[in-house]
Image 1 (spheres, one colour):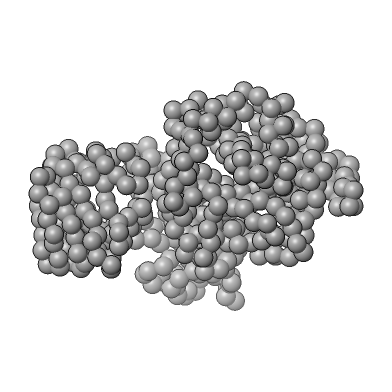
Image 2: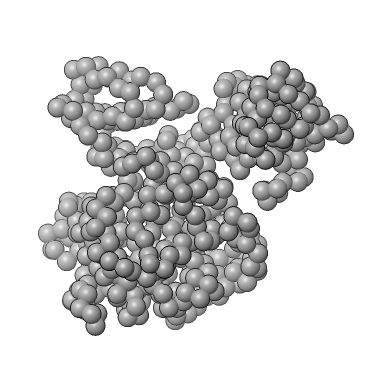
Length: 478
């Protein structure tokens, strides 16, 4: 089946209900679930157009990770739009529509997909996309309705009306109403009624049709997005990424595509998405994607179950032994352990809220943090010290920076380092070191063709990641 469409992937959000594996700086879109690929790469490869054009809209902190993730699976976006601020899905999709329009694809249907869905029935998905593309070519705004399998309070619903047909006889249903996440009793009524589908958050329309609808329904929002788009210029990086202007983006309304446009448009059609679908919004949902033993236990990683049933264990490094346990979710990471009763994993977000309230960085960062130049891993830390293992990829260069509250000791483990330390430029090899006093400008560069590995010992009264003053940065993080 040959289809002509553009693809837009919305890659944002913290996935806080999947903490501690998903965190703001490294959310669930980078997790593998049903394959060895990440959810993002799975989404990008799910279906191919005969005239492909891929655009990813993501945040400033995730942009370089998106590029690296797609590259690792031999994929590449034609354009990555980098948002300096979160403004929800309506501005994100409108930016993508403007980009597609500027690329001469204004009349070609645009398939909009969240980056974090699990869909294994690729044939069923392709059939639904074919119908959506057909409706979009006829000028409709299309959404994908998932027939509900049970009363679900975590999803929005679509109230469906009469049958809609395209000239080529593709069948859909007119959308009469978008309904917010209901209480359980209301969800039960929706399922019984038979004309309510889950709102999947996937859409299809031509850029011109969406922009025309926005001009009629949400002109103020459209003007805000246009001003930001124009202020951002057209300078695309060598990685095909475009950073949006922060000042004008701060003036854009924070609103979803559903609220801003879809709920008010008169030409909205839903295609029946009868393929398997899951937005893996919780650990309960995640557990369903792993095979169970005869006692209902499932695991990702190394686990032993003794006299235990109906448990899910997720861990990558340590062996986890469950003895005499029932109906639990256990998630192990190097710096945090989650233990939850099944059925309560929607409340994991409250843990993240609490961590943010007390300014605990484990709400945002893993012990291994990804940066444009490589990674760093926190090995050990205390009240006034922190020890990191820093890996800089060939050609990588940290920003020229300074800290107000900490001193740093750098020891080269392997590779060749060029270090700016105040007014000195040092070239260090393995087993050589330097000391950087606080308030001293410094920079680390990998001059070799293998990863540069150093151990960094920080000592000071405050060791937070926000104590970084950047003076120059090749990755635009000033």
